[in-house]
Image (cartoon, rainbow, N blue to C red; front, side, top):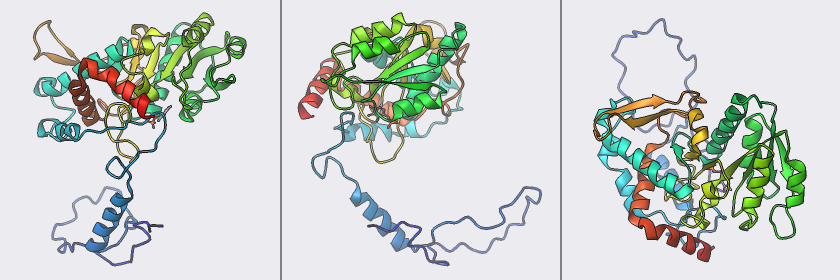
Length: 354
Ligand SMILES: *Cc1c(COP(=O)(O)O)cnc(C)c1O
């Protein structure tokens, strides 16, 4: 077992020695920390060796077979890393006037267009910083929708027993009661059970297809129709999109809202605890509740009059500004290099590999 950096700490050990402070204290009114923060105290060599050893623990394509589950991106081309490192992307500030960052707004705009095509949805927010936060966002949209229609008493979310753990967790965080759906002997949702549990209390259904055991539920249109007939909405957990991207669109099989994990399906390395992105795509009737700001072009045809706007009944902010922007750059670069024919080919290869 590796030691934590804190366990290597020895009081008084230092890397750089700062010169004595020769600036007069000028913030006497500001509340000051009474004790120094607890930071690891190590030498420069130890620090360097510690993180080099940690990096060697990371497993990736370069070391061999990559054994994560149904969801995970298998290919993180270095080209995308290089594009995300370009200074025009890394050197901008989210408070810059829109007309000084038109290249970045173009990235967001173009990626939104592609993701709408891929999901069969009408609008996208890039704010959520993870799939799980996308789930939470989507559920808040569903909640806002029912409340606006005077149906706030709908307080149940239907979730299959095969679901990823984040689904019931997000539903509970959004204030919902989780109703578990049982699977049949083929690992698909038991339709009879669903019919019994869908009703006037149903706010929605959350599921991923193929599900977490890797089975594509072939009754999916029937499932979403049952939920809609009961007055609920359908949330597609897009974490497993790898298997169906370019072949099946959640928007075409009855789903109203979905998240995508850009750090799974769209080439940002996943699993290292680094930043993620879980954009949420929805049908137009949910768009008025979307979080955050979005950049829109002003006059038709004039690309230099961008404006930031907030939706009328926005649920607020899920993160600051536009989410983890450099992950959007990687996703766009990935899609541009795959092209229209490359996207379904990606799905076929992912299934074959799995
Ligand atoms: C990974 C995953 C999630 C959660 O996504 P995070 O980005 O890790 O928060 C949700 N559902 C499924 C099926 C997943 O595989």
